[in-house]
Picture 1 (cartoon, rainbow, N blue to C red):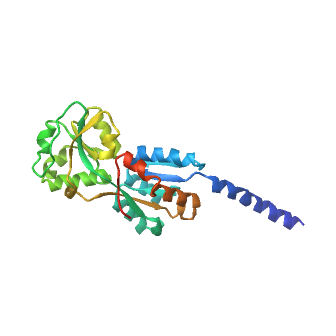
Picture 2 (cartoon, rainbow, N blue to C red):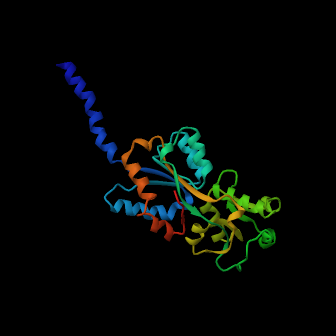
Picture 3 (spheres, helix red, strand yellow):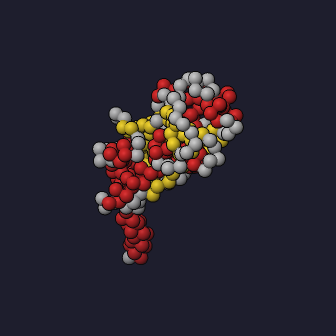
Length: 256
Protein backbone atom coordinates (compact mmCIF):
# COMPACT_ATOMS: atom_id res chain seq x y z
CA UNK A 1 0.00 0.00 0.00
CA UNK A 2 2.79 2.39 0.94
CA UNK A 3 4.54 1.58 -2.34
CA UNK A 4 1.37 2.40 -4.30
CA UNK A 5 0.93 5.68 -2.45
CA UNK A 6 4.57 6.62 -3.07
CA UNK A 7 4.20 5.83 -6.76
CA UNK A 8 1.09 8.03 -6.96
CA UNK A 9 2.88 10.85 -5.17
CA UNK A 10 5.75 10.72 -7.64
CA UNK A 11 3.46 10.64 -10.64
CA UNK A 12 1.17 13.45 -9.54
CA UNK A 13 3.60 16.35 -10.14
CA UNK A 14 4.34 15.02 -13.61
CA UNK A 15 0.68 14.68 -14.48
CA UNK A 16 -0.09 18.08 -13.05
CA UNK A 17 2.72 19.67 -15.01
CA UNK A 18 1.63 18.33 -18.38
CA UNK A 19 -1.40 20.63 -18.90
CA UNK A 20 0.64 23.60 -17.67
CA UNK A 21 3.41 22.88 -20.19
CA UNK A 22 0.82 22.59 -22.94
CA UNK A 23 -0.49 26.05 -22.06
CA UNK A 24 2.92 27.74 -21.99
CA UNK A 25 3.39 30.52 -24.56
CA UNK A 26 5.61 29.78 -27.52
CA UNK A 27 9.03 31.44 -27.22
CA UNK A 28 10.15 33.11 -30.45
CA UNK A 29 13.68 34.35 -31.13
CA UNK A 30 13.47 36.79 -34.04
CA UNK A 31 15.76 39.13 -35.96
CA UNK A 32 15.47 42.77 -34.86
CA UNK A 33 14.17 43.85 -38.27
CA UNK A 34 11.02 41.75 -37.71
CA UNK A 35 10.07 43.63 -34.52
CA UNK A 36 7.10 45.74 -35.59
CA UNK A 37 5.44 43.25 -37.91
CA UNK A 38 5.89 40.33 -35.53
CA UNK A 39 4.46 42.25 -32.59
CA UNK A 40 1.41 43.02 -34.71
CA UNK A 41 1.06 39.39 -35.76
CA UNK A 42 1.52 38.29 -32.14
CA UNK A 43 -1.52 40.37 -31.17
CA UNK A 44 -3.48 38.76 -33.99
CA UNK A 45 -2.43 35.32 -32.79
CA UNK A 46 -3.50 36.15 -29.25
CA UNK A 47 -6.83 37.42 -30.60
CA UNK A 48 -7.48 33.90 -31.92
CA UNK A 49 -7.51 32.58 -28.38
CA UNK A 50 -3.85 31.56 -28.14
CA UNK A 51 -1.40 32.60 -25.42
CA UNK A 52 0.66 35.57 -26.61
CA UNK A 53 4.09 34.35 -27.78
CA UNK A 54 7.16 35.39 -25.83
CA UNK A 55 9.14 37.50 -28.30
CA UNK A 56 12.86 38.10 -28.06
CA UNK A 57 14.48 40.40 -30.65
CA UNK A 58 18.19 40.84 -31.38
CA UNK A 59 20.72 40.28 -34.14
CA UNK A 60 20.30 36.84 -35.69
CA UNK A 61 23.85 35.96 -34.66
CA UNK A 62 23.21 36.74 -30.98
CA UNK A 63 19.99 34.72 -30.98
CA UNK A 64 21.57 31.74 -32.73
CA UNK A 65 24.39 31.64 -30.20
CA UNK A 66 21.91 31.84 -27.32
CA UNK A 67 20.03 28.85 -28.75
CA UNK A 68 23.34 27.01 -29.13
CA UNK A 69 24.00 27.68 -25.44
CA UNK A 70 20.65 26.21 -24.45
CA UNK A 71 18.25 29.16 -24.46
CA UNK A 72 14.66 27.80 -24.49
CA UNK A 73 13.47 29.05 -27.88
CA UNK A 74 10.76 27.19 -29.79
CA UNK A 75 10.92 29.15 -33.04
CA UNK A 76 13.89 30.87 -34.70
CA UNK A 77 13.35 33.64 -37.29
CA UNK A 78 16.62 34.79 -38.82
CA UNK A 79 17.45 37.69 -41.13
CA UNK A 80 19.78 35.58 -43.24
CA UNK A 81 20.38 31.98 -44.25
CA UNK A 82 23.90 31.54 -42.76
CA UNK A 83 22.73 31.80 -39.13
CA UNK A 84 19.95 29.32 -39.78
CA UNK A 85 22.60 27.10 -41.40
CA UNK A 86 24.74 27.55 -38.28
CA UNK A 87 22.03 26.07 -36.07
CA UNK A 88 21.00 23.43 -38.57
CA UNK A 89 24.59 22.16 -38.84
CA UNK A 90 24.54 21.71 -35.07
CA UNK A 91 21.27 19.77 -35.20
CA UNK A 92 19.45 22.51 -33.30
CA UNK A 93 16.67 23.11 -35.86
CA UNK A 94 13.87 20.84 -36.98
CA UNK A 95 15.10 20.70 -40.57
CA UNK A 96 11.82 19.74 -42.20
CA UNK A 97 10.19 22.90 -40.78
CA UNK A 98 12.64 25.41 -42.28
CA UNK A 99 11.21 27.85 -44.81
CA UNK A 100 12.14 31.33 -46.10
CA UNK A 101 8.86 33.14 -46.84
CA UNK A 102 10.04 36.77 -46.67
CA UNK A 103 12.42 39.12 -48.45
CA UNK A 104 13.58 42.70 -47.93
CA UNK A 105 15.55 45.48 -49.63
CA UNK A 106 18.71 47.26 -48.53
CA UNK A 107 18.55 51.07 -48.43
CA UNK A 108 20.70 54.10 -47.71
CA UNK A 109 19.18 56.40 -45.11
CA UNK A 110 19.82 59.89 -43.73
CA UNK A 111 18.13 62.04 -41.07
CA UNK A 112 14.66 63.02 -42.24
CA UNK A 113 15.50 66.63 -43.06
CA UNK A 114 19.16 66.30 -44.00
CA UNK A 115 19.73 64.95 -47.49
CA UNK A 116 18.47 64.68 -51.04
CA UNK A 117 17.82 61.38 -52.81
CA UNK A 118 20.65 59.81 -54.79
CA UNK A 119 20.73 56.99 -57.30
CA UNK A 120 22.83 54.21 -55.85
CA UNK A 121 25.05 52.73 -58.57
CA UNK A 122 28.58 51.40 -58.77
CA UNK A 123 29.82 54.97 -59.17
CA UNK A 124 27.95 56.56 -56.24
CA UNK A 125 30.61 58.04 -53.95
CA UNK A 126 29.47 57.04 -50.46
CA UNK A 127 32.62 58.44 -48.86
CA UNK A 128 31.94 61.88 -50.35
CA UNK A 129 28.32 61.77 -49.15
CA UNK A 130 29.53 61.03 -45.63
CA UNK A 131 31.66 64.14 -45.41
CA UNK A 132 33.44 63.90 -42.06
CA UNK A 133 30.82 61.58 -40.57
CA UNK A 134 30.55 57.84 -40.14
CA UNK A 135 28.31 55.28 -41.82
CA UNK A 136 25.92 53.50 -39.43
CA UNK A 137 25.32 49.82 -40.19
CA UNK A 138 25.23 46.48 -38.48
CA UNK A 139 28.59 45.01 -37.60
CA UNK A 140 29.37 42.88 -40.68
CA UNK A 141 31.25 40.34 -38.59
CA UNK A 142 28.01 39.05 -37.06
CA UNK A 143 24.93 41.12 -38.07
CA UNK A 144 23.17 40.04 -41.29
CA UNK A 145 22.26 43.61 -42.30
CA UNK A 146 25.90 44.56 -41.93
CA UNK A 147 27.00 41.60 -44.01
CA UNK A 148 24.65 42.58 -46.81
CA UNK A 149 25.88 46.19 -46.55
CA UNK A 150 29.50 45.11 -46.78
CA UNK A 151 28.70 43.08 -49.90
CA UNK A 152 26.99 46.11 -51.46
CA UNK A 153 29.90 48.43 -50.68
CA UNK A 154 32.36 45.88 -52.06
CA UNK A 155 30.24 45.63 -55.23
CA UNK A 156 30.61 49.40 -55.52
CA UNK A 157 34.38 49.11 -55.03
CA UNK A 158 34.18 51.27 -51.90
CA UNK A 159 34.58 48.90 -48.99
CA UNK A 160 38.29 49.67 -48.55
CA UNK A 161 37.55 53.40 -48.34
CA UNK A 162 34.36 53.30 -46.31
CA UNK A 163 35.04 50.29 -44.08
CA UNK A 164 37.28 52.21 -41.63
CA UNK A 165 34.54 54.84 -41.24
CA UNK A 166 31.74 52.55 -40.12
CA UNK A 167 29.81 53.02 -36.89
CA UNK A 168 29.28 49.32 -36.16
CA UNK A 169 25.94 48.59 -34.50
CA UNK A 170 24.97 45.37 -32.72
CA UNK A 171 21.76 45.08 -34.77
CA UNK A 172 19.99 46.89 -37.58
CA UNK A 173 17.66 48.83 -35.26
CA UNK A 174 20.67 50.24 -33.42
CA UNK A 175 22.09 51.44 -36.73
CA UNK A 176 18.76 53.10 -37.51
CA UNK A 177 18.82 54.83 -34.13
CA UNK A 178 22.26 56.33 -34.76
CA UNK A 179 20.91 58.08 -37.86
CA UNK A 180 17.66 59.12 -36.15
CA UNK A 181 19.70 60.85 -33.44
CA UNK A 182 21.96 62.58 -35.93
CA UNK A 183 24.99 60.71 -34.62
CA UNK A 184 25.69 59.43 -38.14
CA UNK A 185 24.83 61.28 -41.36
CA UNK A 186 24.10 58.09 -43.28
CA UNK A 187 23.20 54.51 -42.56
CA UNK A 188 22.46 51.25 -44.35
CA UNK A 189 19.41 49.36 -43.10
CA UNK A 190 16.51 47.32 -44.45
CA UNK A 191 13.69 49.11 -46.22
CA UNK A 192 11.24 47.91 -43.57
CA UNK A 193 13.24 49.48 -40.74
CA UNK A 194 13.44 52.80 -42.56
CA UNK A 195 9.67 52.72 -43.14
CA UNK A 196 9.08 52.24 -39.40
CA UNK A 197 10.89 55.46 -38.50
CA UNK A 198 9.76 59.07 -38.89
CA UNK A 199 13.26 60.26 -38.04
CA UNK A 200 14.96 59.07 -41.21
CA UNK A 201 14.35 59.09 -44.94
CA UNK A 202 15.46 56.71 -47.64
CA UNK A 203 17.78 58.51 -50.01
CA UNK A 204 18.72 55.50 -52.12
CA UNK A 205 18.10 51.79 -52.66
CA UNK A 206 20.93 49.37 -53.35
CA UNK A 207 20.46 47.36 -56.54
CA UNK A 208 19.43 43.75 -55.96
CA UNK A 209 22.56 42.54 -57.74
CA UNK A 210 24.81 44.37 -55.28
CA UNK A 211 24.31 41.85 -52.47
CA UNK A 212 23.01 38.40 -51.59
CA UNK A 213 19.19 38.41 -51.56
CA UNK A 214 17.81 39.36 -48.16
CA UNK A 215 15.77 36.37 -46.97
CA UNK A 216 14.25 35.36 -43.65
CA UNK A 217 14.41 31.66 -42.77
CA UNK A 218 11.91 30.52 -40.15
CA UNK A 219 12.25 27.14 -38.40
CA UNK A 220 11.23 25.32 -35.28
CA UNK A 221 14.10 24.58 -32.96
CA UNK A 222 14.80 21.08 -31.77
CA UNK A 223 13.08 22.07 -28.49
CA UNK A 224 10.02 23.35 -30.35
CA UNK A 225 9.72 20.45 -32.78
CA UNK A 226 7.34 18.55 -30.53
CA UNK A 227 5.32 21.60 -29.50
CA UNK A 228 2.00 21.68 -31.36
CA UNK A 229 1.46 25.34 -30.45
CA UNK A 230 4.85 26.29 -31.90
CA UNK A 231 4.11 24.40 -35.10
CA UNK A 232 0.71 26.08 -35.40
CA UNK A 233 2.28 29.52 -34.88
CA UNK A 234 4.89 28.83 -37.55
CA UNK A 235 2.16 27.78 -39.98
CA UNK A 236 0.26 30.99 -39.21
CA UNK A 237 3.30 33.25 -39.66
CA UNK A 238 4.23 31.78 -43.02
CA UNK A 239 0.69 31.33 -44.25
CA UNK A 240 -1.81 33.41 -46.23
CA UNK A 241 -3.48 34.95 -43.17
CA UNK A 242 -0.24 36.66 -42.08
CA UNK A 243 0.79 37.70 -45.60
CA UNK A 244 -1.11 41.02 -45.70
CA UNK A 245 0.53 42.13 -42.45
CA UNK A 246 4.02 41.28 -43.69
CA UNK A 247 3.34 43.25 -46.87
CA UNK A 248 1.96 46.21 -44.93
CA UNK A 249 5.25 46.47 -43.07
CA UNK A 250 7.19 46.38 -46.33
CA UNK A 251 8.37 42.77 -46.54
CA UNK A 252 8.19 40.98 -49.85
CA UNK A 253 6.69 37.52 -50.20
CA UNK A 254 8.87 34.75 -51.59
CA UNK A 255 7.62 31.54 -53.21
CA UNK A 256 8.23 28.52 -51.01
